[in-house]
Image (tube, rainbow, N blue to C red; front, side, top):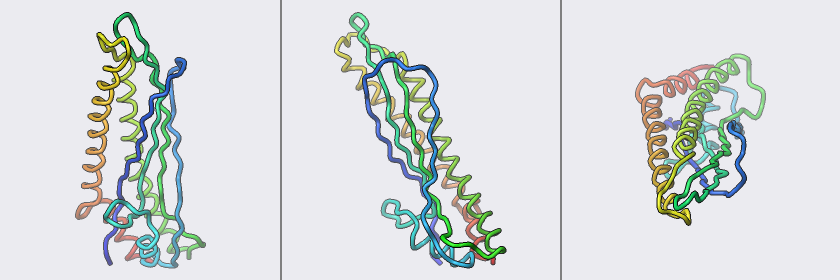
Length: 200
């Protein structure tokens, strides 16, 4: 059986929206988007995942993935001859796409499935946490950011874009490093797959 592993996908949308300063504090919205699979054994369920799992890049289908949409309410304020970011509040929506059996499972298979899906969901939640950490880092580096000799607030946008690119690249690398360990030989995801396929 061809191995199909969890993948990590990013769909980031950065937007600059002028708005009045908002109160500090934000909370990510996290949602689960299930896709239907079928089968009455662990092996059949895994085969159905291979047929119906979300598409990811050129690698085909995967078990699950985590995506996010990120927008910002941001205010650039001229101060003398400089420009300062005085408001920078994120709106973050994280979506976990996970498989879900479309019918009730036999008791033994249900127990096996629950162990598998809880492990898969936990893996994806780690990706979700790294996304939230990335957003907090962007927020910290952005608020109060100042560009001298920038009364039209143009230079500051270039500098902010550069910083966001660096932070985003680090977050993506963290995701790749985590997946490499989890999905490597003897890794957690491989063990979850083997237990499901070899179980009832």
